[in-house]
Amino acid sequence: MLRQTKASPLLSLPGAVAAEAPDEGVAAHYGDLFREQRALAGGTGFVDLSHRGVVTVSGADRLSWLHLLITQHVTDLPAGQATEALILSAHGHIEHALSLVDDGETTWMHVEPGTQGDLIAYLESMKFFYRVEVADRTDDFAVVHLPAGSIVDVPEGVTVRETAHGRDLFLPRARLEEFAGAHGPAAGVLAYEALRVEAHRPRLGLETDHRTIPHELGLIGVAVHLQKGCYRGQETVARVHNLGKPPRRLVFLHLDGSEVVLPGHGAPVRLASDGPESRQLGFITTSARHHELGPIALALVKRNVPVDAPLLVGEGTAASQEVVVEP
Image (cartoon, rainbow, N blue to C red; front, side, top):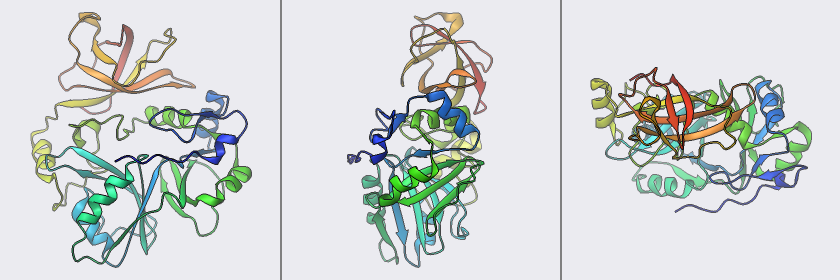
């Protein structure tokens, strides 16, 4: 069951416009989408991601226990090293995506808004005799993203998850306004999402549906470690990896810039050569306006769609594709 996210206090900042689903509770932008994108791309500013769920696992067995449940190898995860992981269904479909870091005593993770309840319910059902404690820390901690290249000093005692794309801070929620006042300017989630699409990074609930497997999104080796077993859905991962034939593949699209309205999530993708009434071969997962590239999108298409084929999106928007996952 999804839990309603509290509205961020940063929605009171000048120019703030509230985001729509699935990012309710934080700002879509603060009045200038492209300026905010350029700031993030240049390593300045921050993004309020306080609507995301925060879950912790503590206890002596936390890493060895998590290792049995998730797709990532974490038994010897060094303190401070960030990683990605998934929880799969018995059939290998993606159910949860975890952004992880361990601080030496506690494993911290942030997840899609509202999904922490279902994640915790699953983790609690798998505790058995292991010495672990699972906690929902969403009410106490806010996720704040600093872009790659940021020179902001992280407040003392704050857990940091650092990747090639920047740093995610697990900031005490009570300090969110103080942090914003000291380390602005703030950028909204639309700027963050545009850079995510540019980087071809999939997101649970947008690039996934009820039958998505990790191979379709290029997550093998990123969030799925092939040299480990003992997790639910492993058989599907191994079988598809060995056969090399996932049914769909993630693509990056450059969209015709003359269109005023971006295609929404689920908009059909077809071959341009077959026309706008032809058979649907995929769908848009996320679209965005980029400060340099113009309108762009990620989409899931059938594996056998030619990689160089011009495409049509929605009612007839022309699109060219870049390969993200090889067919």
